[in-house]
Image (cartoon, rainbow, N blue to C red):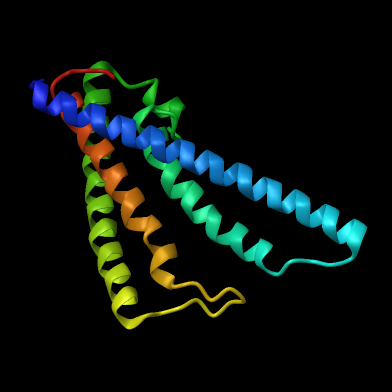
Length: 166
């Protein structure tokens, strides 16, 4: 592969790792505030309204920040019983088809997601919850995650066509 493409792949790999680390940090934060909430409720008899809401929103970021890294490292769900029984040629065909479908879906969700985020920003939409955050902050996790996953599907398709196994 050309050096330019390898440097882009490396940059995306580093970005995926950073997003996965951020997702892991968010997961740790959510676990910590839930533990604190349980202890606070048991010992002091009062609850914080924002804990559940922050936990719910965090699940989106954890998912969309971690998924591209998992896809890059081939740690996603695969039907092993089918895949392992395919010959090398059919595995390559299967990978190209899977990568093509994944890329198409990710591109669609990225474009629609960006459109929704921009619309929410322009209108100033807020969530109808206790914290009432701007919706675009929450929705922005979708196009970011789908863009990064789209690149991983593209990379998998190109690598499979070229006969590389990474």
